[in-house]
Amino acid sequence: MSFDRIADRYDATRGGDERGRLVAEAVAPRLPGQRLLEIGVGTGLISHAFAERGRSVLGVDLSARMLAQARGRLPGRIVRADAAALPLRTATVDACLAVHVLHLVGDPDRVLAEVARVLRPGGRLAVVGAGQHAGRSDVTAVLRDLNEALRAERPRRDRPELLLPAAERCGLRLVEEFSFAREERETLTPAEACAQIESRVWSTLWDLSDRQWATIVEPAMAALRRLPDPNRPRPAGRGSHAMILRLVDAAGAPPQR
Picture 1 (spheres, rainbow, N blue to C red):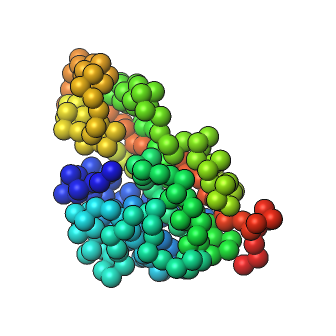
Picture 2: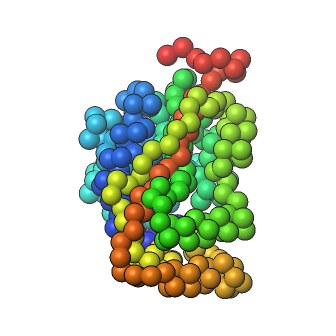
C-alpha cells in the first residue's frame, strides 16, 4: 500500500517529530549495534530520531512522495525499495525497525525472511504495531468501536498470533513485548475526529467497500456528531504495542556476537 496520497500531511496527522522521539526513546535501548535499517521509513520521523542518537541509519520505502519528505531529514540515507526485496547484502545490519508497516505489506512472510537475511547473527528486529487510545473519553470510545469493527472485517496481519509463527520460521524469536506512549499530550474533539474519518486520514479507511463504509464508518461518524460539546477537546493520547525479535542460529540458540 503506497502512502503517496498522504505524504503532504503525514507528519501533521501522525505525531510529527515528537512521535519519532517517543519511539526512539522506547525502542533504541532494546536494539544493540550501530547500523539500523528501517523498512517503511516514510517521511523519516523515526529514523531521524535514531540518527540523532548516533545510529547509522538506512531507510527504505515504496512511496516516492514520502521519501521526498524524508530526504531533508536523512540525506543520503534513504532508498526507494520493496521490503520484500531489500537492496542489501546478507548479514550487514545490526538491527531492523518496522513501525506500523507489516500490516500493509503484500507478503509479510517474505518481508520477515528478507529482514532475517540482512540481519547479522544475533541482530534484532523491532516490530511496532497498532495500539489503542490511552485517553478515556466519549470520543475514544467511538473510535475504539470503529477500529474493532474494521479489524473484524479485515484482521491485521501484524497481530502477534499471526506474525510470531512466521517469524519463527525465519529464525526470528521473540525476546520481549511491551507498550509505550505514542503521543504525550494529544487531545481530540468530536468534530476533529469526524473530520479525520471523513477525509480518510487513516490507511484503514482507504480501500473500504461501499457496504463497509455505509454499515461501519457512517454510523461511527453519526455517533461522533451526536456527542455534546463538539468542539471541546477530550484526552486522546495513544499507545503502541512493540515486539523485539532476535535472529537465532540453525540450532535455535542465540548466536554469539
